[in-house]
Image (tube, rainbow, N blue to C red; front, top):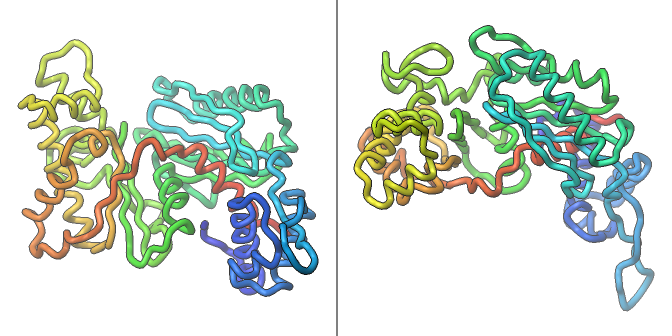
Length: 390
């Protein structure tokens, strides 16, 4: 699922380890022979990987399969509570944390407010408090943690395990280095939108074309799959959709520049515009704005329509440069504004020079299915298996 740095036989072994672990995880008992058939692996390969996973304490032999002839094969199961993983997701305003066992079962979940946090030191302090509280509530010790995954908005330096959340001072926050002082395990640091893209679309479905994922929430994010790989770009700066220029000299963006997409289509931007137009004392949620537009309120409809026009400009540029087969969108405006995809497609078709460029698959990523803290916890475990010296 994640890019593997190993070469040759070591690379194949790490890939097979993750494939076998996933397959065992999906089933309530599976035999070695079933693994061979399902994964098209040789018996010696399966045996080696199974022994590795058993020696690491991740799986066990448990029960037998019912057969009418011959010996009953021994079934393999994941030892769900042998180890745990911690998942942390940091949005613009909240820090979400969970602890999951090896069976992907959540044994603890919570969140903390980080709206007032403006520095790396403050952010790490909040993270430490959340981790302390989580581990105490879950009743686990550091030695039981197999992996920690941290997902965050902003720019992520994967190799260094650091991130830049505050554009104004470009402070690099050494998340991995900080966590390594406490945990002797694999630590994954990744952009939160990329986490969701990897978890949902790489290794979990067959993609025969490129894909663009546009994530619209408090801010705007995105990611791209090209030839089965997530596009990172030089300095990990690819897919910064929030800062695509849609109106030169337009609305002020959080980065300090003007006319960027985030200043028009983000949840906070739309809510602020509606509050201004309606001269309200308190903001109205984007979900409520969508509801009012659906009921025929002109101001709500106009504000959402204008936001979609700016998004159409950005989408058109992506279509012309990448020509992907699928665009996946996420956010309240896509869930609650009736006919939103048809409206967006119509606006895009008016902008492109050839209609077939926009004749692609459009998918709405349901908000209820997105739990980035859980996804990064799982990805951290799989990445640990890929890089392990087992």
